[in-house]
Amino acid sequence: MLRYLYADQLADEPLLADTMFKDRAYQFRDRLKWDVTVTEAGWEQDQYDALNPLYVVWQNPDGTHGGSMRFLPTTGRTMVNEHFSHLADNRKIESAVIWECTRFCLSPDASDSVAAALMLGGAEVGRNFSLSHAIGVFSRPMVRVYRKLGWGPTILGSDGQVSTGLWEFSDAMRKHLCIKAGVLPATSSWWFSLSFNSITAAKRIRA
Amino acid sequence: MQLRLEHIIDGLKQAKTFEALESNISGLRDSLGCDHVVYHSVNNTGAQWAALTYDPVWVNRYIAEDYVRIDPVVQGCLRAFDPFDWRRLDWSAKNVRAFFGEAREMGVGEQGYSIPIRGPNGQFAVLTVNDQSSDETWSGFTDQRAQDMLLLAHYVNQQALQIEQAGAPVQPQFQNLSPREIDVLSYMAVGLSRMQAADRLKISEHTLRVYIESARHKLNAANTTHAVARALILGLLAI
View 1 (tube, rainbow over the protein chains, first blue to last red):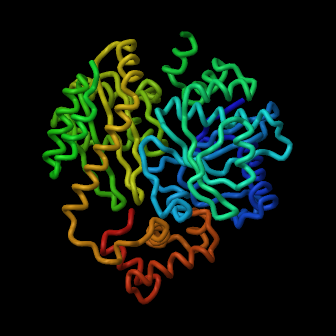
View 2: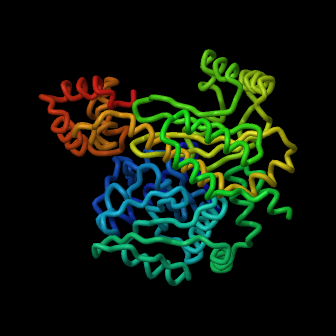
View 3: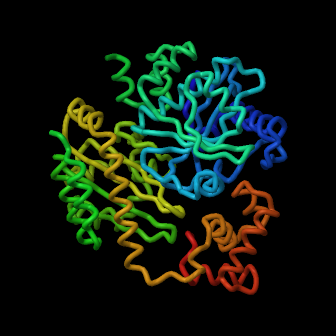
């Protein structure tokens, strides 16, 4: 199922946190050869994980990590503005309705539908928090994965290894991703409301 | 009623003083047709500022009792950044119930919707819309205006930041400390070792030394202790 957890909530989920940060080490250090910091425990973490970001996580039935990504508002500190603005003509992207999405990660044995479900989680974040776009930092091969799922980013810039791009949120895209992920829209709304205990979302399901 | 968003934003942009912004907050309350609007900002030096429509008696009481410690709205905004309805918060603790009971007597409405804002350099703010209405009316109100309120919260915050900057003296180069440099010096200032600070910031000790060195350079300081002392005197640290 999809879960939406702030970093401080993830601390109460030791198995999920452990498998998630280890999967990140595998993907970003071992596979993509990015220059990332891995702790003694084998966790890939950076300074933005210390800002209590919001993680969208696909949790497997056994409680382990299937895939995840990380959101931060662009009005505060973000990776794209502090490290990758040179990819976008040195412009800083700061907006109330744009959140940064980074560290899109899939566990090595994740099925194709997990990637689609994660994208659906991103679409839910956009829809429920009235956002217009997400801005992301990603490796070039991921562009193909996103496009295959029918939700490719508009590329802002690239240095060969890493690119930044924008995703536009829409209700139509959410529906499309529900089909790709094999998740009913009502189920997706229900998962979201479980995480945010949102009365509004619960009402939408009944409606 | 359709909100005339552009009109309100134009009004906000005219506000060049905190007093003018306060009257804009009252105007915003009237445009929204709700009981109260509250804007509260804490900058990276810990300085606080608020513009709100609550009864001043309640505001003084809130400050005197240091209710910020237990107020679930503030606590919620400090950790998360998604807008939330007050019904989502945990009001069950005895002291929190007593606090809210007192607030209600002072004219604070039962319904609330708060938008946390993470600003530049660790600045933090919240805009709250408050009202006395039924659950159903309130859900309709927030559903319809969620995006407008989000944008308004950020416009208010931007204007407040601009007013704050305009009032400050011309800023010399040492003000250009990066957020990371400020974090590192703050941890040094509260007595953490290099290793502990690096651990908290999830960076290597080597990287930490680079931050200290660049901060020392910007502050024209002789060594780390000198840099921490300079930054403290200049009010650059959030401790």
